[in-house]
Length: 385
Ligand code: PLP
Image (cartoon, rainbow, N blue to C red):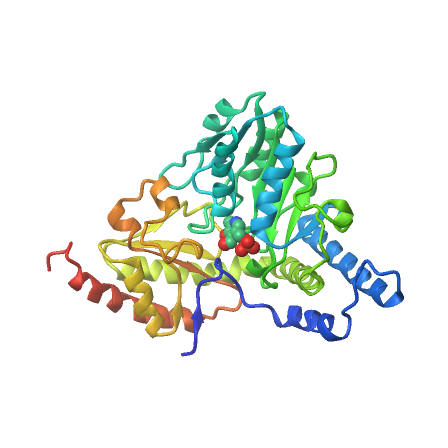
């Protein structure tokens, strides 16, 4: 078996169709969209088409789309841009389980005199909306809460949260990097003011993303310079990235249903078999309110890194936390916030699937995984055999 890739929340394979659209933009259609000549003008049209494709997936107006360098920039631009536009307000509300792109940016605000509230989550990884409501006041400039968690796949009731927050006159941003392309989104029917997405999480290129800014939302530009993106994000456009992202969004819109059925079927088959065949295993997260592609399972008294190394020998790629935190032996901040015991948090593995996974890959992993856990348990100093 060649590489079996179950690490799609870290990054995804670029779709062939995306690559086909992407290629000519390097050596044939390489003009600058800001140029006056016809050669540059045709690139401007490509960007317009990409903007329309992204807007089509999100059900919003193309003018509400700002292209960025990825999820991290979109998150930072949303946070810092909102605060710069509301200098009288000094409070930000977020959650303990955000991706570092939001959490680190928010914690840094404390060094600049802001009050940052990090909402807690319960055992399933869900928020208490009463706690959120209690913290909303006239000093709150922004609430930033992720749509779906990158480690557990837990989906927050974002529409309800957006309604609650904007109803109090506070700007609401959601990091939807893991949600876009996996679950349906309809911004036309929602109160979300700002939303981040990233190309490489939905079979598009790396280094490109989007910040959706609802018409009328006050946001100061994060990067200053030229007039690109209507003066809202300066810098010559990453044209191949933008065009690739546009195509990836078009494909996602077409295959969402597939993602929800085929991917969920494969994920559930893998998850049920592992929970059944591996004693001392438990699911982390909210089983019923989750992305269809993500399964986070703890194997108690076993090191997640050791599991990953043994899976790697069989060509199976998974993750023991988010890609950004791997390399550190600290247990995941998400699992800790959910109160997952240390011995289980250390042995957690995230499987994240995509539309390219097959049933043969699932069967192969179901065969390889239980003996790995058994062997590592026998070596564990915490288990008497
Ligand atoms: N937000 C979430 C929820 C993510 O999972 C990631 C990437 O892992 C990011 C933000 C950062 O996105 P990017 O890699 O495009 O900067």
